[in-house]
Length: 187
Image 1 (cartoon, rainbow, N blue to C red):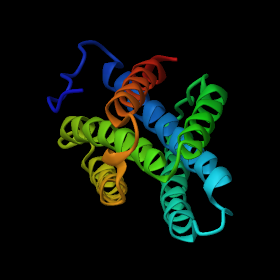
Image 2 (cartoon, one colour):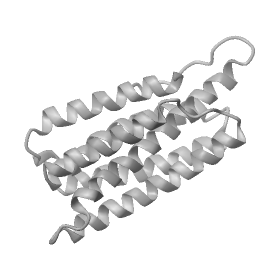
Image 3 (cartoon, rainbow, N blue to C red):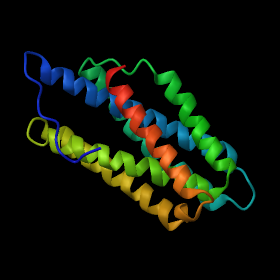
């Protein structure tokens, strides 16, 4: 992803189409994030001695759920259809979350670090793109980005980069996130 704003497309209705892409992909991303944390909580949530990470995961899931609820409202208000792949992203998010949690706490944090790094870049590009055309939405995205960065920073503090196989695990998760972003804008 790049921090450069995407130039507006020429033609009637181009901005409306671009706004639909932005809202659709952000809704899909927050949906996936909620399910990643749910998957991690299923594995780590009730495990003895894991109260600390269980609390962290619950808090992060709660913030992602708030973001998702906001995008639900925005889709309705602006008459934008959600991604047709929502069931896939729910399942994929849960599987990635549960799978990384099965590898241990550090792998779960590595997942968070990888996902939130991509999302931060993604939101930064959108914020730049929306700054002049929809400053209120840009401000909301800035708030969400700050919360995503806090998730990333917490994951790093908790040892994300010390997870076994971190470089490969993070690279695969980042690539998956980037692919999901491109697909969800259109589908």
